[in-house]
Image: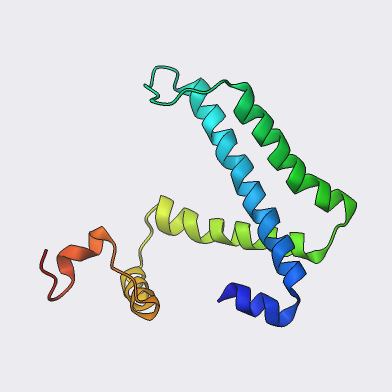
Length: 133
């Protein structure tokens, strides 16, 4: 739905720029998290072990793909992408991390699940009427 709105407002090139910026930003942050966990949790068993230079190089390339387009051609798409990402943090931190619930989260979640025709999450399965495992 967001992609359709963005295409109506702008063009497909802006959408591709928006997506690639956000995707490579998250790829780089994911590999950074891998590196942080590798050094902070040394004693944890890892079924797949790779040479440390591979994630470092991958993270460097992904950060290059995030920073260079902003430096070469700063456009509003990057500002929109950052605003969208940080907007997600504004929703995530209170409602997911701190589990703030004013009684409106479950009805909103169920309405969105019905609208999108998706299966309720596991914590909702016990009180869904008519559900039989």
